[in-house]
Length: 87
Image 1 (cartoon, rainbow, N blue to C red):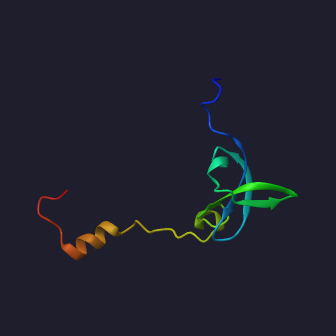
Image 2: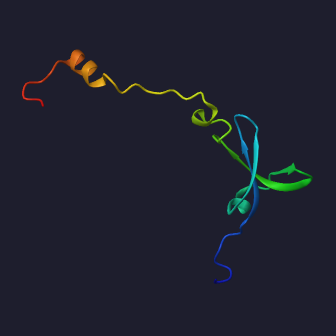
């Protein structure tokens, strides 16, 4: 591996802005944390704020909506009428 061409790779904490939950992992975003840090398990790590994580995403929290695709074509045809020669 060539030296000096790869970004720094190290421990980083991702903080969910919606819930405040913290996830410790490794990332190349170590240098892009703007000096912000957080203490976790007695150690200090750089922190990256994210808008959505597994702790706040509707799919993973069970609050997701299932969109009903059934009947959408029929509703469109009712609303705008069926064109001649279609289908």
